[in-house]
Image 1 (cartoon, rainbow, N blue to C red):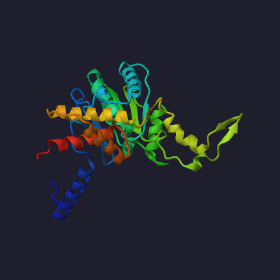
Image 2 (image 1 turned 45 degrees about the vertical axis):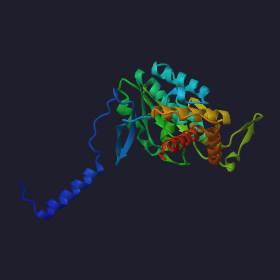
Image 3 (image 1 turned 135 degrees about the vertical axis):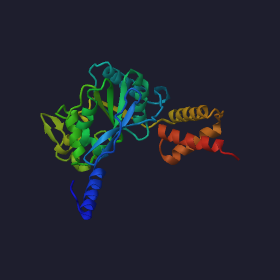
Image 4 (image 1 turned 180 degrees about the horizontal axis):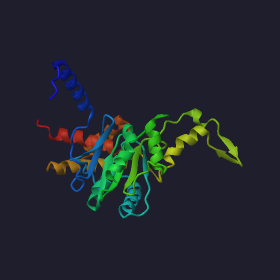
Length: 294
């Protein structure tokens, strides 16, 4: 046995403590048979998949004003689940209009058929190959969801996603499809100067090199699915649905009145936004006040 000096022992303990902080904590592998969703958690030089025990319960029937979008995504996801050709999808458009909710509703709808969802943050797209390796041999089909994605020019994660969509060595395995939501159709900010430098070729206006580069990422998604702000009637329908769901969950009766409708419209005007998110937020506020003890 080595007879180490106390100061050496203390130094070794400090080194071991530092190394331990760099290592990911011990965590059980995700049991995909009972878990429908997971998050990628970064830790030091790598990361791990962490099961999500409580997931959104939104159903497809509860999503209003996005019937065409639902049909497109339902068909594409069914094709994927059946092992048929399917496309990576970019769900873009106005904030709060149901882009993320649609993906979660698809998970709830198709989970019994083997669909699972992995959510990843933009900064962690550099670990795409590790995520693909972790699930490529699983007997399930995975949607890799990157929610509310936007890039700034030159970000490394932009290049990684572009490579994955382009079918390079970083391309996903056969059982993984990529769905991205964003407020921007091209995922990058656009400036007036980007349009300078366009030229006519054989009578047709060609985009400038700056615009070509900005469009090049979104072009790699086979599906572009646009989402738009609600009409007032559609917004009121969404409020009625949210109020009814809150009342059902709490086993109370909340009557629909003209006064309630006027309050809902005023709420959207103050928010300057008619969308599903605004309807949901109003319903939380109204039902909370309705049930508040006098």
